[in-house]
Picture (cartoon, rainbow, N blue to C red):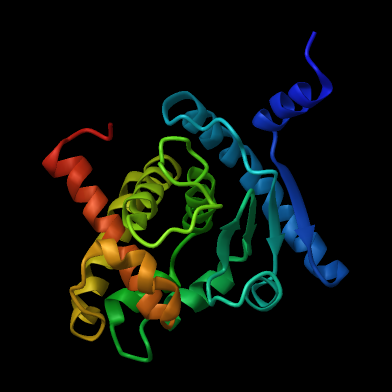
Length: 234
């Protein structure tokens, strides 16, 4: 017979709790609807990760929250999705992500990039939730309790690649990487050509665009490695 603790671990491995952390009833209704829309697709992606990419221990919960709470209560970073130990915190609100993505342009006029972000669908937000879920794969060497100072680029880039591969349409997948490649070129002079291994030592010290710059480079590099260098995710 299984002990009660063993039983709870098995149950946990197959179920993620979806929790709303909001401040008023109006937000609750809106976020509940988004949560229900995302839940089925995230569950399907979870199955892919469990079957192919060694997802064993799921996060305890995904906490859907507002942009304000995400960046001022649960974290002080200007990012609307993150994982803290075994809980994912994220705002699923499309308009909030559009605002954040446009802020990356730092007030510069890049019509093609601006138009892209103004027209993104909720699939892009869903892929961000998938990115956070992918972090829990046992294929990555580090876990969230480690003091990590380098080597993060590979995990971050692979989380982008896998979540987008399975949660975006083919054209959406191509378009987002193409846009991020353009962003890398636009901001290279400002944010530098430092080694990807330096991701962990400086990423969270910069402003929004400085932070995202290393994410873009990591994702584009993983795409090159998978699709051109090795033609194989494994």
